[in-house]
Image (cartoon, rainbow, N blue to C red; front, top):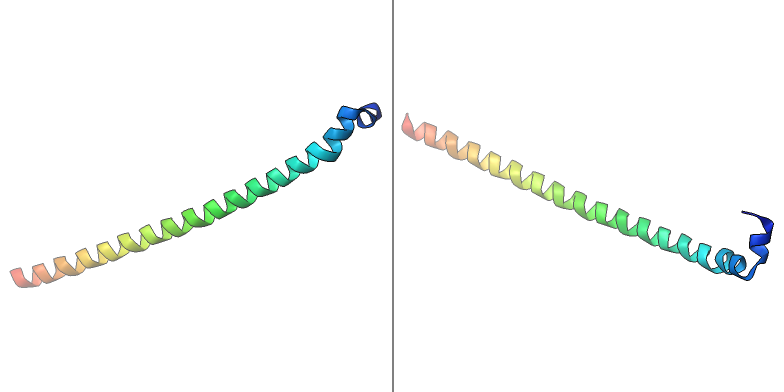
Length: 70
């Protein structure tokens, strides 16, 4: 960027108004992505626990059925 750009009306507006707003928007976006990732991680952990419990229950059920068949 040239020094003339910063001295022009458009350059001044860009540097004093647009750039700070872009920085704030980027920060807000980063926070939203981070929060979304946390929520997704919790959902995945819940699904993992659910599958483990289902598999554990299925294994217990099979074990009981095998005992009853003997």
